[in-house]
Each structure stands twice: as structure tokens, then as C-alpha cells.
Length: 469
Image 1 (cartoon, rainbow, N blue to C red):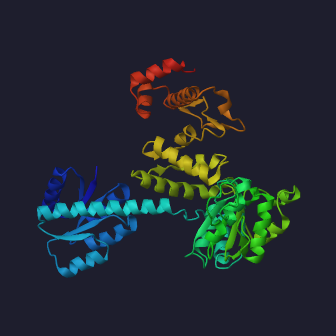
Image 2 (cartoon, rainbow, N blue to C red; image 1 turned 180 degrees about the vertical axis):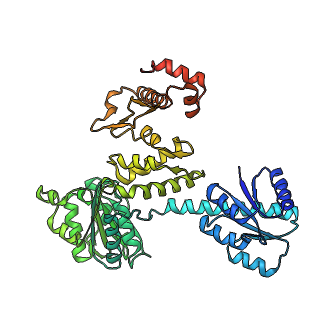
């Protein structure tokens, strides 16, 4: 339900506004001063504020300015019994959506409230869509490794130097490449991405350099390759360690001469492209094995940037997790969930073999499955089933169980013959974990996991769960 906050020191005005808005099915909260109003904004998810201008302790303009720091996109409607054009203009300059004089006209008030709420929704939706469309996000973290990467990007991006980015899958290599482009002199030109590992070796040359009509069986028309598409811009060759040797030779020539030839063609085409490459492989070992050209390696690695795995920069996990939590809650249109200190410690203790990508998936899972806040118990209960098993200890201490322990190096999918068998296993372990944490108080456990008590008894009987002495 839409929540509206009324801030006004006149009881009669607050009562009148509350009666009108509640009749229209809005949820209304009212306070008699600006300081309390700001506290409500910090704690609750408010959709709109109606704020008086002339108040004691803190006037409406001050409240508006402070609120802009807390929730910049929150629509404000200012109300006053001493309305002037100058006051309305000042309120608009400070970010207010509209200005209404006292006593408010009923129809004008309701129309303004509806329009302000619609504008607020549009602003939120626009931000979500922009974030979904744009893959360039902030590089989060303040660890020494991340600070060094940010500094390198600032120095290298404005130049034309080629960059080779190394790091494990999911560590954020693509994000580094995007920021190198965004901060370069080519930012207004396209950034073209090629995943060399996803393209079959027999098609990679056509993908990169294009082909002429009739150059091979399925070439029914001329195709422009990625090098030409990226002209005057940046070409990002992701997972370049998986590129075939024949394609490597052509890429090397393109880098040396700034010219390409389409497959099946004989015309040389000049291209002005900055190449950024990335790989999760050790290219020195690939060179020794004869899988990668040394001369291409030296052409690409004018600047080397290594992105460390998340396990080597655990101090960044709180910042990254909280940012993901804010983004995902915003995408789902729900209040932002708080991640407890215990949950942060639990997140830091996990192995994170999937790096940043795995952490984002984990945070999304926790947001969906946890209650109002995310606790360490949630982290252990909903940890990635594709990784090491996380099992709760069965030892009770004062009605609580010890934190779960990680059984490393054991992929537990192998023990299940069907998806239903795995679901039953997961449900059994989850119910057992909750019962033990609640000292086998069935009523409390049923409330915790939001099922009927009779249903929980059926589950206990189904899985043969018994309280251990």
C-alpha cells in the first residue's frame, strides 16, 4: 500500500489530510515536527511527503533539504497558509514537486498527490531500466587491490594503450574493460564485445573480420565484422585465450597494420580500433603449450591489469553485498533489507568460487527467502547448493545450534537421482535446522517458516525427524 507522510504542526490540518487520504486508500503516517519526520524517512519506506513550511524546531525548507540527502527521488508537496509565488519558486528550486496553499482544495490535493506518486514511480522505473540496459556499474570496494585497479584505469583509459585483463571467471574483468572505455577519448563511440570462448573456431574469423557474399556455403549476404563495427571505438576480446591459432594470426596482423580483410575478400579495410582483451587463463602456460602466440601476447599486454578473486579481498564483501541488496530490492519494488553484522561475517567465511557473480546471486536469493532482515542463519541456510555443503551443527547451546560448518570439496549433487529427491533433502535439512534453532518449539518454528503448525507436524512425520537428547 502507498505510504504518505504528513509533517505539519497543526493537528487540525493533519487530521483533515489524513481523513481525505485514508478515504482514498492511502496508508498515512503523520508527525508534528520536521525532526521526527526525518526519522520516519530514515526508517520507513515512504512514497510521498506532504510538508508544512512554517513550523517550529525545523521549518519545511530545511526538512526538504535534509530529505534530499536521505532519499533524493522522494516527491515532496509543500503546504503553507502563507503561500506566495516566491515561496513556491524557492520550494521548486529545492526539489519540491508542487506547492499547495492552506486550506487545501480537495480536488487539487488529490490530483497533485496522484501526479506526484506517478512521477516518483517513473523516476524509480527509469533508474532501474537504465541500470539494466547499462552494464557499466561502479567498481565497488576499497581494498588495496581494487584501489590499485581504479588508479590504473584513471591513468591508462585516456591513452591508446592496449590492455590485457586477467582474472578468474566472475571476478569483474568485463567491468574493468567497460570503465577503460567509459573514461577514454573513445567513450562516445561504440564498445563492441566478442566472447571468443562462445564462438566456434570455424566462425570466429567471420565474426571478427566479416565475410563477403558467397565466401562459404551459408554466406548468403555480406557481413560486417566486429573490427569494422568498433571503428573509432573499442573492441573488447573476452576470453581471448580460447581463440584459435589461425584467428590469432589475423588479429595480430590487424593490430600491426590497422587493416583487416573480410573472409572471402581481397580488399584491405582500414580500421581505427583500440583493443582490450581479457582471459581467465595463464597465457604464459598457454604459450608454452603452443596454444597462444607469444607475439600476440606482447601486442595485447602493453598494460596488464589483474583482477583478484573475491576470496582475496573479503574486506570488500560488505560494500558489494549492501550495494547489490539495494539494487535488487529496488528492482523488486520492496523495502531495502538490512544485512546484519553476523550475516556479513557469514558471507566473508564462504569460499566464493564464483566470485562477484556468485555473490550477487547469493544476495538475490537471501532477499527473496529471508524475512525483514538478513541474518547469519539465512546465509548458512540458503548458501549456494552448487558449492560446498553447508550443514548446521546438531550441538545445542542454550537452545541454539552452533554455526553451520562447511564440508569442502564435496559436490553433493551426485548423491541425488532426481530433482524431487534433492528438494526433499533440502526441505528436510532446512526444517531440521529451524527446529533445532528454536529448541524444537514447533509453534515458533511454524511461525518462523510461515506454515501452519499442522503442516509442520506432517513434515516432521514425513521425514522422520526426532529431537536428539
